[in-house]
Image (cartoon, rainbow, N blue to C red; front, side):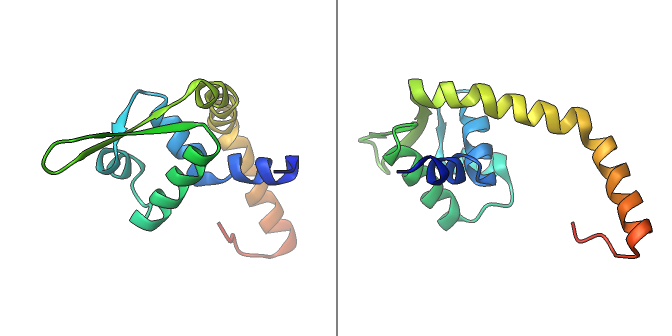
Length: 115
């Protein structure tokens, strides 16, 4: 996968959220979905499969009734957690400045906020 494709994958909002939540420790699917909130079952499944394929997440099935499936960051997944956490911290630290810049831009250009 080219660098741009990998950056697109790891920069995806769902990937960032899944990696952030799994940084707290192993989680089952529904626990992860509940924590993230507004992610669909299909999107979470797709994101987890992509992360597993890329070697960032492991999927462990425990043979119980029903089977218990748990997801956990691999070593490379934990490495990704470092820049993801830094990006999240940057966003929180600069949120007010960004919102002020958006409001100023919208006022200056006469456009309504789209986000």
